[in-house]
Amino acid sequence: MVALVALAGCGAPVPQDLPAGASENFDAAVASIGCELRNERDYLPVELQTGMSREQTVAMAQHKMATKDAVPLDGGAVRLVTGSCAQ
Image (cartoon, rainbow, N blue to C red):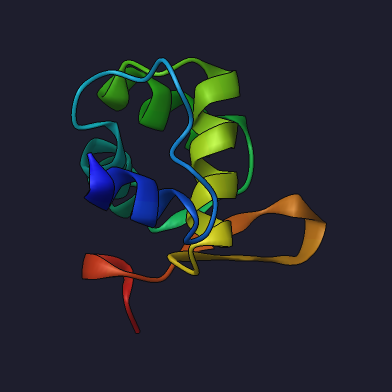
């Protein structure tokens, strides 16, 4: 319990009401579409692979940016920069 409280202060908390393993599944799904979320063609396969809604997918992308696991791109896009998407 203490570890969870300590981690809560580090960056943005993981969005609530997500399927088990959502963060790892999100990373794998985003990597499978080229590491960037730009438009409907990108979001839809990530949502299908993870079981997350659009709102949950956007919240996870925001969480990843807050924790420096992703960076914002022009036009509101997001690029994952960890794991297989690290450059």
